[in-house]
Length: 527
Ligand SMILES: Cc1cc2nc3c(=O)[nH]c(=O)nc-3n(C[C@H](O)[C@H](O)[C@H](O)COP(=O)(O)OP(=O)(O)OC[C@H]3O[C@@H](n4cnc5c(N)ncnc54)[C@H](O)[C@@H]3O)c2cc1C
Image (cartoon, protein in one colour):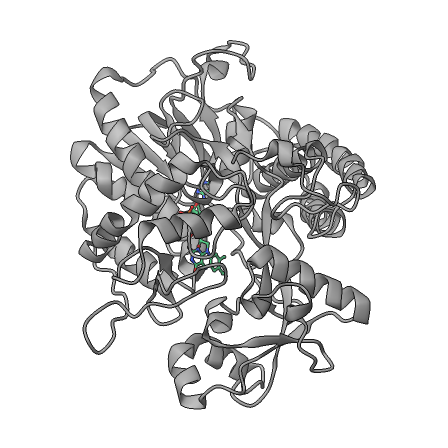
C-alpha cells in the first residue's frame, strides 16, 4: 500500500515528537516508531536537560563547559547555537505540558552534573525523560494532523536508487522520497511517500553487550542513511556511562544518574577505597570519559566486575526524595542505598557521532533531516557534556522544522517509486541464527571496541564482523523481511562504522582511547 504525507517522522523520542509538533500545522505528519510510542531513550533519561536559566549562570560558562568536555573538536558555531537557543526550547517544552521541579521561591530547582561548572540541569525528580516523553505523547495524540504508526519499522529510505539509478557517496543531489516501512502487526511492507523525511531513530547502545539503552536503540537510522550514501561522522565517540547498576543479565542496564555524584556520592573500589582523586582533581565529578576509564582501570587492576558508589554519608530522607526511582530499584535488589554502597560498572550509553547535519538539521541527502542521538551536529565533539543531548535534540528539531516548512511549497511526492518486492522465504533455523549473530556482534564490540582500544583489537573486531556481514547480507537478500533481520543488518552496519572511524583516528581524544596512540594529536584540534 502507498501512503502519502507531507512529513514522515521516523522515531518517537524527543527529537521526532518535537519536530512533528513543530511542523504539524503545515501539513499531514506520519510519526513512526518500531515498538510503542514510549519505548525510547528519551523515556529513560533520568538526570535532566541543560540550559542557562538563572542569574549566577551565563551562556559563556555553558559554552566553555561544553567545549572543554568536547576535547578540542566541538563545532563552536553549533555550541553557541544550542546553548543560546536552549532557554526558548525549554519554554516550548513547558508549553507542551512538561513539568520541571521548582524550589520554594518558584525558580527551577537546578542540579549540577559532572563537567558542569554551574547548577543548570532542569529536572523532574530523577525521571525527567519519562516526564518529557509522556507530556509529548499526550500532545501528539491530541493533534489532528499527526497520524501515529506504532509497531512500524522503517527498513530503507527511498532515493533515486529505488528508481534504478546508481547512487554513490559522491553522487550529487541524492534525494529522499520517504521510506519502505514494515508493519510488524501484519508483516506487510508499505511505501510511505513524503515530501520531507525526518530521521530521529536514536542511539546504538544495543550494538554492545551491556547498555543503558532500551532494545530499540540499534542504529537503524544511521545504517539506513549510510546505505543510502549519506555522510556519517564521528562514530568512534561512544560514551560509556560510568555508573550503570551492576546486575548481570538485566537489559537495559539500570542507570545511576550522574546527578548522584553531583549530589555528593563518591566512587570506591570493592574494598571501599576512594580512587577518583588519583585520576582527576575534580574527583568523582570529573567528566564521564575520565570516570569511565578510571573505573575500567580499577576493575582491571583489582580483577573486579564492579566498583561501588557511596551515598551513605548524605541525609537519608533527602536522598530518597531526590532519587526515588533509584532508591526503589536498589531496594528491589535488596540494597538500601542510604546504608549500603551501590555496585556499579560502565555500560554503552550514548553516541556523539552519527548522521552529519548542518545548522538547519539537513543531512547530505536532500529532503532528509536528522535530529537527536542519531545525528552528528558537532555539538559534542569527542565527548558529550552530561544532559546536553535532550537539549540538542529539541534545538535541532526546531531548526529542521523551520527549514522544512520553508522548503515544503516547492516539493512534491515521487510517484515512480516501485512497491517493495516481498518475495523470499525464511527458514526457522536461519531465524534462530539471527539472534545468535546479534549476540555475537555485542560480544565482539564489547571485547574489542569498548572503553580502551588498540589497532589489534579493532582489526580483530573488523575481521569477525566481516564474516557476520557476509552472512547477514546473504540472508537479507533471500529471506522474507522481518524486524529481526533488519535490526541485525543495522547493528552490523553501525558496528562496522564505529570500527572504521576508530581505526582512522590515530590519537586518543575524548571518548576514543587507544593504547597505540595514547596522546592527543594537537594538529587535529580545531581551537
Ligand atoms: C538511561 C539513559 C539516561 C539518559 N539520561 C539523559 C539525561 O539525563 N539528559 C540528557 O540530555 N540525555 C540523557 N540521555 C540521552 C538521551 O536520553 C537521548 O540521547 C535522547 O533521548 C535521544 O532522543 P531521540 O529522540 O534522538 O531518540 P529516542 O528517544 O531513542 O527515540 C528513538 C525512536 O526511534 C524509533 N526507531 C528507531 N529505529 C526505528 C526504525 N527502524 N523504524 C521506526 N522507528 C524506529 C524508536 O522506536 C524510538 O521511537 C540518557 C539516555 C539513557 C539511555
